[in-house]
Image (tube, rainbow, N blue to C red; front, side, top):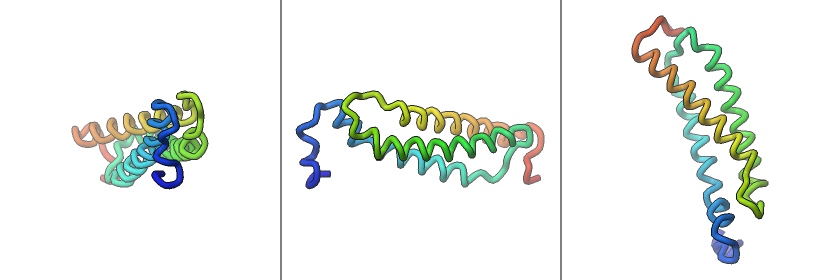
Length: 113
């Protein structure tokens, strides 16, 4: 970025900040995929939500990737597709947290038992 875009010095502060931070969303998404892969037990009643979370995780990958390549160059600060990806990741985090809490507290039986 330093050599190709002159460290973005000619851009206004808002778009420059969003352009520079676009890769953070990709790193956040990668950490969510690692968290999803580390699930060892799934609480039976929440299993359909885990399937939905898997689909949301894939959709968030598509939204964040699109936002990274297409919305980084937008003149305004509005990023509707990246926002959808972030909301999808938030929903996945809630579902994974619910699963972890219920499995840890021992409510019901996990699928691996």
